[in-house]
Length: 379
Ligand SMILES: *Cc1c(COP(=O)(O)O)cnc(C)c1O
Image (cartoon, rainbow, N blue to C red; front, side, top):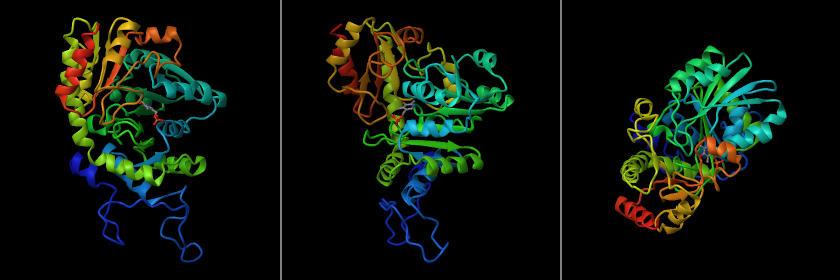
């Protein structure tokens, strides 16, 4: 089946007891058993829940995985992924991973004896240089946030596998509509479903999809053992969200392409970062491993004052953290999403005080462009 058909149907059957076309919210903590050891596959709500199973089956199909496990947040999903690493193992990670991921690695997991090495994963030679027998996992994000650097997924998969390590890709920014890392050779895909997958800014959640059935079993074990599961209601919201994923991603992408071109032509914008622009450093790679460029853009206004002027001058774009919802958002990475990263590292990663990031929503494109136009006039 095609992507949009799977997005609407995969993992879901009409409810056998009523025929309801939509999978119900099974808001229950336990399941009555017919006799000792005789049950319908569900014993306790932490271990499994039919609404959660449906959304896991749905997203596993979209990512072309063997199975998936849903978690209470993107960060819970990332910590489940890191449960594949043990004390003494090293993890090689993209240097500009999501700030919360960096915090989890540095402030939490380091305490348990897992070590982290950060590289610019868009440069393969940097990954090669730090690989070794102790590396259990390569964890990449592509495109990165907020500069949108692109890493070659299939090349990194080959490097990781040559060293007996798993490749994990945080696919939050692209969603499986534009990028399917498991097809390119990755072992695990993680998502903050809070963003494009749910798409309506009304739920926090995470998902891990695995290529290997044994890894799926481990993830379900972690759900049960650690307990950071996605609730029945959030599972239901997420199922509703993925039904329109194809439509939404097409619109995010089409509008972002127009706005990125528009911004790149503005004399008051020093630099526009969008993988769909031919002058983007990862443009060719993006064209080959993604089927679209997504809804995220960042651009350089030149100074903190300019950034503030733009942010405060917008009416349709709302100033907020997060991304991937139907409504357009703008944020200031240096003081918001990336505030926990030391100033020197921020400068090196290009997260300057004048940089702003857009999550282009699905409103009328004319309104979005007019909004940016009038805000830039304030500079
Ligand atoms: C938001 C985000 C996360 C964390 O997800 P939460 O749902 O907020 O816990 C992880 N990775 C990326 C790329 C994100 O954008």
